[in-house]
Length: 318
Image (cartoon, rainbow, N blue to C red; front, side, top):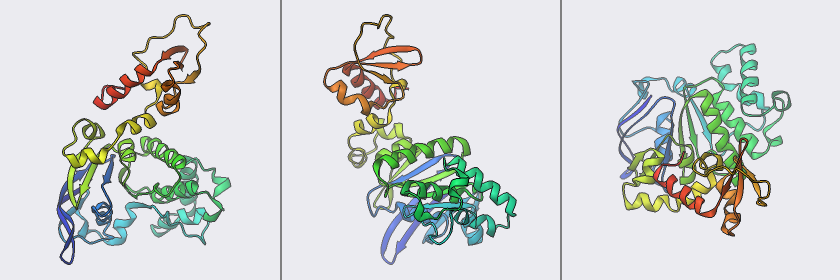
């Protein structure tokens, strides 16, 4: 879908991105990550020609991006910013319809698309169409930002740290929303973040940049199990925190036997949809808990969590 071939970007004598070679597959979430100044946003913006490259070639659908008219290129590539960028003087529907209008869609098709996308994003169309951005929460505005990028049904979406300005709870919810949305729309998404937990959660593959060069490119499992350098290990940091916040109990209790008789067992009962982070403190106090999975109850102890974390690091947990 998108291919970088020996791509370099310089500003004067300063090299920001140096000799990048990689390919982004159709339908994947490809995450660009790295410390501040590593070149990740520059790399993203070169895809839709917001920033011109210095040397090398970027291909989009097997055609050099320089061969596309700029307006056509940007119509076919949605863009979601950290700052959201909704037009404050326009209603939500007016924000969403801009690119479809420029592409010549008729009113009925645009109206149907707005309804479809708002409902897909969990925003009731009748409630939100006529509202202005200032009447929405930060999380709702960012949902509209994603919807606007999808309005003309582009094959590629660029997302430049779209959730980093949001509070942690809203951020996690929008990450979950994006995963759910992607399972249905199957777009090619290039996602920039500085948060390794976000990258591990969202990315089908991750490209870690260091001083404008690729330090490691691979799946989340490859990063966790086979970090390519000390820089990668340091950047990963404490992945236990990631696992505690992302792994659900129902996904990791297959080896914990169900209780045959539990009428007289006086332990807290939690849903299998709970995350490890939600029960870890209770388990740390040496209090077992009962996990309800379907019609079964399973007794989960602290030692089981240690096993789960160890298996997850090796990629054995499912």
